[in-house]
Amino acid sequence: MRRPVAIRLSAAVGTLALAAATTAVLSAPEASAAAGGATGYATQNGGTTGGAGGQTVRATTGTAIHQALCNRASSSTPIVIQVEGTINHGNTSQVSGGSCSTAADKIELKKISNVTIVGVGNGAVFDQLGIHIRESSNIIIQNVTVRNVKKSGSPLSNGGDAIGMESDVRNVWVDHATLEASGGESEGYDGLFDMKDNTQYVTLSYSVLRNSGRGGLIGSSESDVSNGYVTFHHNLYENLDSRAPLLRGGIAHIYNNHYVHLNESGINSRAGAKARVDNNYFEDSKDVLGTFYTDAAGSWQVNGNIFDNVTWSERGEDNNPAGPNPQSNTSVSIPYSYSLDDAACVPGIVSRTAGANKGLKVSDGSCSAQSPDPTDPTPDPTDPTPDPTDPTPDPTDPTGPSGTNLSLGAGADGSSKASGTSYGNVRDGDLSTYWSPAGSTGSISVKWDSATTVSKVAIKEAAGSSGAIGSWKVVNGDTGATLTSGSGAGVITIPATSLKKVTFTITSASGTPKVAEFETYAG
Image (cartoon, rainbow, N blue to C red; front, side, top):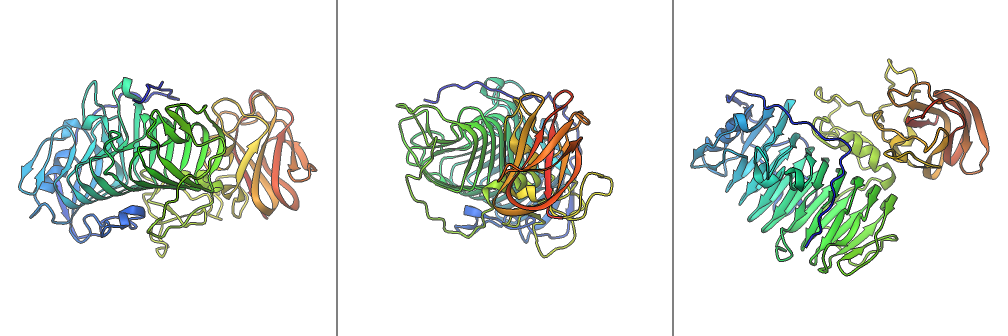
């Protein structure tokens, strides 16, 4: 049996008000199923196209979603349901019909096929209301947020799963979703992304799973091994206790994901499961890969992963961590084509692409973000997040030199870090995350696998810490030579130098310095 774990959340999310919404369904012209196309195992077994070719319907309530399903000519008639607004218990009711089987306490996709649910406009939020897929096939869920779904307390929905699949489910693609809770089982929550009872050919891509005791599982027990062929790629797993994911039987391909603050365990391969684990970035976590809480072993193939401040427990009868030096103990053949980003740039590319309302941006396979159709030069007007690889600087940002920020495809390390901070935060393109030294001084480095020419450095401080950095020096990390020195954050010019590592050393500060971004440029 799985031992209980403590939930350690960085911050609790408050109870969210339930907003009322209309139940109107608006007809619209036909449209394709979703932006981009399915990837991973969802491309197998005939592929996953959702409601492509069917009518497009707009819904602003859960009842309207159910009505759209029930108003189809048959349970397999293709349909695209565009969702905008907050979907909750207050605006969701059961609807009956020959082409549907729905429920009042969840979004029910039961005994149906050929359906796309996609968030549009200002976004779609399923608040305390889970999505349940049962005995269904060819389903796409894209660009939605599902949050705070409970199995105990009030209100109840979907057994506590944000998205749950069970009973002969085939071909599901969940893409650019944000799945989150506000605690673990003791707070009433269960899994964020669960599959059981013969669920196969599923892909979870460019999504965020965070602030939960349990990320998700494949197989509900050691005997439920009929599930599998699941791909997880370019997802952020953040502040989870375990199940990132838990695998029982079957095959999973896990690549280019960013794992941060896995408190107890991560990828848990059990009961004969096989996991292929390629080019992921594991950070500030414990026991990120292995067989845990059981003697029913699984196996794994590992390639190109980075383990940054990962701790490993001792082996025992019910505990078989893959580390501290993970090695492959199986071989997994992948039947579809895919492109791998280098593990060093995974935090950066995932931060720019994963989750709802990111403009459906994806990786180009070379650590840069692009629109889902790379031939379309028109930016998505709903995307509020600029691509940090864009060579055009923000005219309102006086600290950003022109050119490509080379740090976005790099690694990072340092002399020390304060609790709750990470070296990788300085090269993720996100000004809301940062590194701080354990004291008032310390060093942070950006590094590459091959020699890179750098002539400018931009040091950006986190909000609320402007002016904290005092004196500093920039050091060639290969030779230890000081390239330049000065004081205060901003743009720093150094002699054009070819190196594999450049270090920013803070030699004095007022209070605690916080480096949000350590950008590097060739010119």
